[in-house]
Length: 396
Ligand SMILES: Nc1nc2c(ncn2[C@@H]2O[C@H](COP(=O)(O)OP(=O)(O)OP(=O)(O)O)[C@@H](O)[C@H]2O)c(=O)[nH]1
Ligand SMILES: [Mg+2]
Image (cartoon, rainbow, N blue to C red; front, side, top):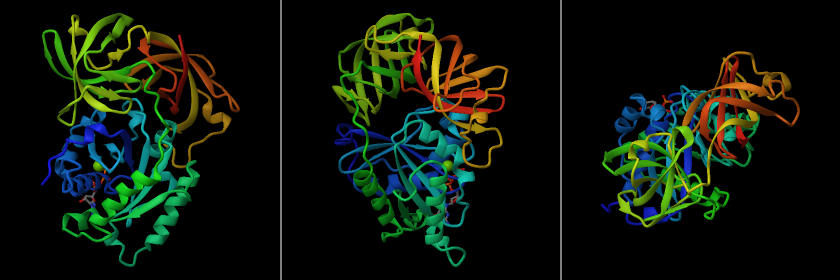
């Protein structure tokens, strides 16, 4: 078997979020994707137990870096497996993703109601490309035709604001893959899935000239003046030996040097926006290196306590239907608010926009402490009546 890593690090990274109702087979599917692609030297095989262990231990929720990776002919995919029980925005800041894969089971529920939280969250977080996957197809026997399941999925996506007719829908069975089936509904479905990611999904170009921005998601080791951290480059590019700043609590910037870049066990000299990787930081003030600290091009970012958000959707507590986008849904009830962004959760109070209407769904907040914010960053605002999802449009 070929080992993986020799080519993977050079391909552009695409971030995939796999969502769907509880128990629809997402984790098992993630596992068989890695299994099938490992056979071609394009992934490290992960068992369902390994992945399930990670989600059950809460690694998914508390460690935003939990993911599997695999590659196609031209791109590398960083795949976040989201448990169906809970939308991510409720427990951690929304993560910016490129592609949403909606998995529904051939014998399971397919309605807008069961998909609303996760689809809305990904849509607001900037996902512009979608795939559908009907899983467990070996179970279909008589109950409901796969065509009906597919039609229901397209319909549900329309209801949720995604073009359901444009959706590529793949049919397959992780169980058949595990049993060694190589045909269209077994390993063939995994190949069809990768092919669809490679050919049908177009991704907006990223600007490598933008100033570097990489939030630290976890600190893997800490030795004197060297730390190994992991995270994803949100903006710009990072080169070996580059001088940058650590921007942490209080807004103080400390100098650091990029002493190492590692992706899939391979050392790199350069990485770019979209890459999730390990970085060796070197310099004084390494006690400053912690989750939430941001590695930035010197002087390119400050911490802010006032933020403006554009609200795109509301998930009300106990919502069963499509996201409510009429004016009343945007009334923010009085009481304490919590703003979640990718790397921080912070108390907030409303300055203006509690009853925004029409297209100008802008909300201005004052934050309990200064936080690293940048335009376009996805945000979730938790209120007593539900969660508002949107993007940062400005901060000061
Ligand atoms: N018959 C059949 N069962 C499957 C298939 N894929 C997964 N399952 C089973 O369905 C159940 C749920 O699978 P998971 O992969 O954990 O589903 P999930 O979508 O990750 O579930 P959550 O993370 O809780 O939302 C498990 O018992 C799996 O063994 C399949 O292709 N066929
Ligand atoms: Mg799962």
